[in-house]
Amino acid sequence: MTKVDVLGVGFDNYTQTEFMALFAQRLAQQQGTFVVTANPEIVMAARDDAEFQGYLAQADFITADGIGVVKGAQILGTPLKERVTGFDLFMALLTLANQQHYRVYLIGAQADVIQQAQKRLRADFPNIELVGCRNGYFTDTAAVQADIIAAAPQMVFAGLGAKKQERFLVELKQSLPAAYLMGIGGSFDVFSG
Ligand code: UDP
Image (cartoon, rainbow, N blue to C red; front, side):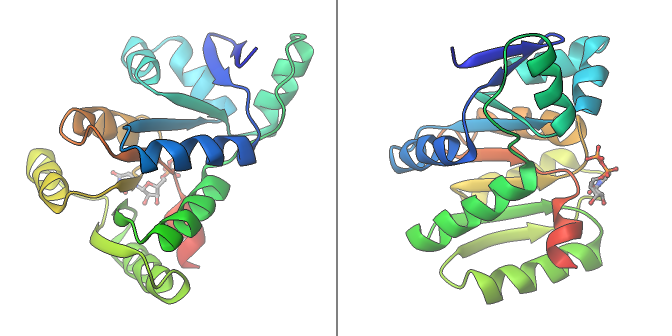
């Protein structure tokens, strides 16, 4: 069984290594992939939020980003293989992007944070083609999305906080049908520090 239901959210039951093998293959085949890394707060928030549930329904994969989700699945008698966090996946995907020279777009966090994240990415993953990088505080969402679409990234990482980043990526999805899209919460804050 690959799907495990925890309080209405269907988690994909793969290890991080298994997820990465799938993502690498899908990227190579230009198969669009929208990934949500869901922690217990997201599971609880989605329970009485139909809008959020709609975004989760559009995810190609949902990972268990929190030990609470893994424990919950175990208690329900349908254990998940392991916790797969947004930050760990982000690092693994940057490693893959570096190997494959992928075009990457980063969006989210405060201006100084994303600036630092950009610096670190350039230093640690020099073969990534960084096609765009901007902070997560903007008002003209349509203009920001148009900029991302024009940059034609193969991967977009959005750190705008839960729900906001999922809404943003769902809106982007139709215009970037071959891209890997993932919300990463506060990962830029960690990566820049
Ligand atoms: N963030 C953003 N734009 C916003 C709100 C938040 O870029 O309008 C960023 C914030 O700077 C942080 C990240 O989103 O880097 C995660 O924020 P938070 O911890 O509030 O969200 P969570 O992932 O815990 O829901």
